[in-house]
Length: 359
Image 1: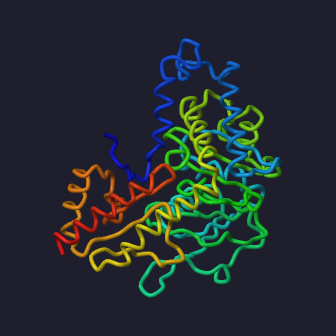
Image 2: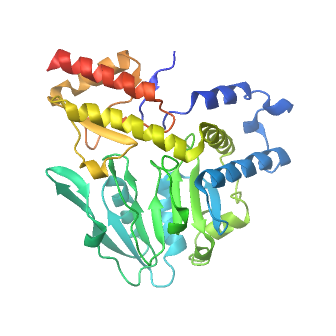
Image 3: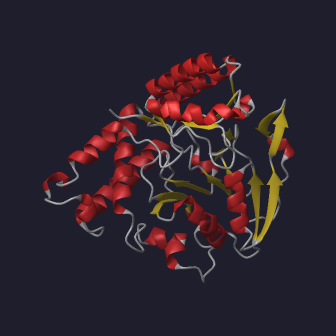
């Protein structure tokens, strides 16, 4: 049997997608070869790539004046690519700091320009939270404003989209396609695929066309958004199999009813898990309610000595990858789109039984 996988990434993929990929593995559409053996320049593969982009545009309602790029190197490579492409002449940018991933992004950007760091983390009644927009001061002359919409490790998520005259850049790696989003509010969106899009190896960048002419001319072509856009994300050989699998995930999402429909299920999953944690004296979540992530749910047990036992017994019950990130400890359940409601119910049932036996 397939276990329930709560890994933060590489994360769970829809079973239907894996089964279809399995069926097409040796002979894709009667061509006598696997799609991973196919030239990325072939008409068949180009059609697969174009359909994936079209389906993503439909899912996210991406305006025509945005380019969609299917790149490599993970979101971490974009920490460098973004300032190299967008800093422009004044070499200034604003970065909102809310946790580990936003910090990684700003530290990399500091290699290329003058970065104004905006501390947005705070505490409300002993819980981690994000400051209100009115408390954040943005620069007048920055090339862009960057923020991580959802901190995967901390489970801290913005409950608003920052309003600014600056081009807005956001790391949506953990939350893309999980809830409706107005793409037109952003200058650039980027996301590693291995959470809500597909397997590791692919990185999605959605960039407004007017931002394509600000790149440092000396940066490598493979990192230059304008070059990638001109070459349909094929300046070099792309991550073809990950691109294909991501396209299957987009098809699956459309079959579920799109982002609006999956968002309702995500809210139901989050309500179930957070509701149980809040009702228990044995478990705690460290995040203020308005800023709780609907994708990444960290929690602790009453006695930290029980953490290893919790993870061990969870695995024995086919509930996998619940250990928290090594930097923070505790537990974390990542409940991405592909994690079904019954998986969260099974987790809650186990948590309740574990609490009763170890309280």
